[in-house]
Image (tube, rainbow, N blue to C red):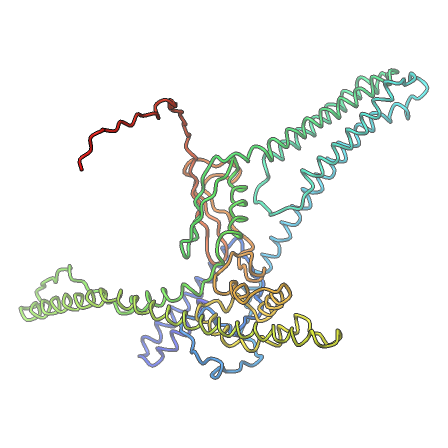
Length: 537
């Protein structure tokens, strides 16, 4: 994209001298070489899925120019020739990203395999303790009495409870792929492994080698193992679930592009798990990110910078033997002219706020006008739907129109007003024609009002309200100076980067609150009202 913009700028100034032509070629070649080196030094590249077809069929939804109101009459048809191409660098970066995704999948399946193997080891160990004596020395075992048979029932039910508890706590669909291992879960896995291995060592040295004949003692040994596993599961609940429930930090989340801010209370979490909780809340609480709304301010800034010129007014004009009094006079004249031009530029800069004021006022007027036309068009369309429903009640059951067909029938009457409103508010890339028709059919099916239908377009909703292809931020990058496995601390700052923006997170510890009590004597509320007998009349 950078090289394309450089080439377009060069072609625009192609009418200049040959020296500037050669300078443009050198700068363009230097810029291309820098872009190639930068692409080689990248460590990871995120590839977005291609977005769905916009409502307006316009690929330049992020353009800086204001679209014509009569776009329906002046739209130019675009042929099927593709304007996108893949270079060798793009292919290399795509291959690198695919390799990274394969590595993430392998790591996820490897951790799942380890968890399954450890779970099978835990659940088969008590059964093996009970079965091995019957397989190796059945003739030497003593008869198992009533107490021993009762322990069999205890082991069976405890294993069933442990199985359900482990399934509920650990075997859940993963919500995200974290960059580092979860420390507490890894410690619990190591603890369980050491615990089971120590039980096997004791079992091999004291029972298998001596071929113990007391089978009731062997059963009690297996019961003690199951009891200890249940206590470890309770410890896992405390560390993984209960520890983070009590709020300990207040985090401030700010979006870098538009400055939208939210505050959340979090418990004792590591930085990576706090980042996961913040991203989940972001999709629910933050409005959808719309880069098109930022183009107006960028165009104003570019126009302002284009009108500025820099002069060296503080520099001294040196006097050499070759320069005479006449040259010094010319230098002084240029110095005074530079100051005058800078003063004129400062006066023009002071009037920029008036331009901004009138631009925003004109934009608000256009939005109100488009909104009024849209509301009227939608109300008329829903009125037509009610009239169609009354007519269909008189028809045969086979001739009744379903909500999808009704939505397609009335959509053309409101499409033009809706398209113009979405263009004016720069939301055309957030809603496709198919999604609008589906939403209209949903409103018709549930007998919703025109206001309920328009709420999704008049007020920008949270990110989850839109389709997955509109999120534009599925893969996030966590940037932190501290280790991501360390816990949150006072003043901790980290960034969550995606394709178009980043979330800046600042953590503050919730202060210690000291609450005191003040006792109020009920008798202190009593008072005596004394009335004078003499009144001034």
